[in-house]
Image 1 (cartoon, helix red, strand yellow):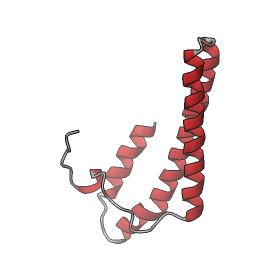
Image 2 (cartoon, helix red, strand yellow):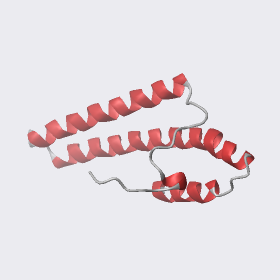
Image 3 (spheres, one colour):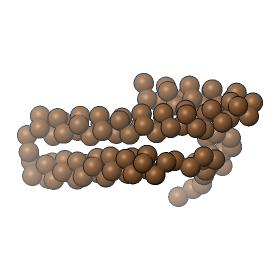
Length: 105
C-alpha cells in the first residue's frame, strides 16, 4: 500500500495529547465490537439469501451504531484536542472541525 504524505491535522499518525479515558475506550471498543458482530450477522444473512428488507433493517441498525460511536469520539475530540489547540492559539483546528462535521452530516 502506498503511503500518502500529509501534514497538519490530516496526518493519520497523530497521537492525542490528552489520553482518552478508560471508560471512553471501553465504551467505544464495546460499541465497535457490537457493530462488527452485527456486520458478521448481516454477511451470514446475505449468504443465506435472507429477505432483503430484513438485511436492510440490520444495515440501518449498524449504521446507527457506527454514528453513535462517531458522536462519542467527536465529543471527546471537541472537549480535549480542539479545546487544547484553541487554548494554545491554534485556530486552524476550527477548519478541521468544520471538515469533520461535513463528513458526518
